[in-house]
Length: 346
Image (cartoon, rainbow, N blue to C red):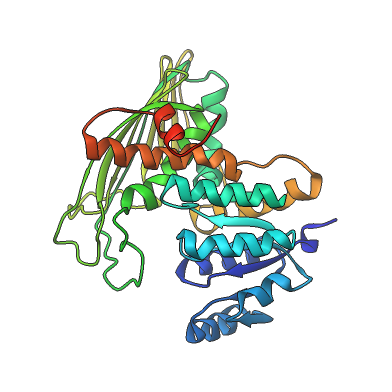
């Protein structure tokens, strides 16, 4: 089969759906249609993207025979997503779910358990793993060019105003669950299973429309010995922002360092001494989103395992859970205690 045989249906046509649709158009993928509860938004998106099906009844979209993959971009709340997963799972539709799968580990586990019980593939759209620049970094991380990696730092800072948004930022968890999850999934992909986590976080009360944390610093120790610091500060008013999707990434090894962001990379090595500027094509928006879906479809078509499966993604969601527990109790938290509390057996 070809990629065109895998018709895509989007459930949720809010702002990020525009990026999804642009990405799929660029990649030549087949979009069957979309569903949304907001009639005016539905009308505008149908007109903008020339959707052949645009409905307020998401069950109708799921039931359409041409839809084989559901792209779930509806808000990341269990009460919204779980019924979709159950209904779609009974109809054997493949599921791609926008990150975070859920901000709470127990809720995410329930969604994953449901998909597995119904026997349907579930991939989480952790698009950071598919950013062209970050993919270009990976060979230098894996091939010994910088020696043995021992430290990674990711920093994202900017002032983000979500006061006009109906639900984004309105949960008691925000920047660590909704933004740092990009980075948690990325360092999990690069460095494997984490062991302990320590976090500090807070909220600038002048940031209107935000209920939860708007800055956090999270330190992660991985089983392989790598340590990572993930900084997300969306209350930064200064003149030197590092906004999403231009967050800075540094990976240090004992023989070099990889530095860069989603648009530029430099690899400095000591043996032999060199400065390398890897070339790549594409940016985070929208190319990483196209890479996610094409990877998922190709793996489904070929019967191969795919990255960022629902089960594997629980490792990244557990970092969210561990970070909030650490900040609340002022201590280092282990992966084991987080998993056991959620009833997850490795």
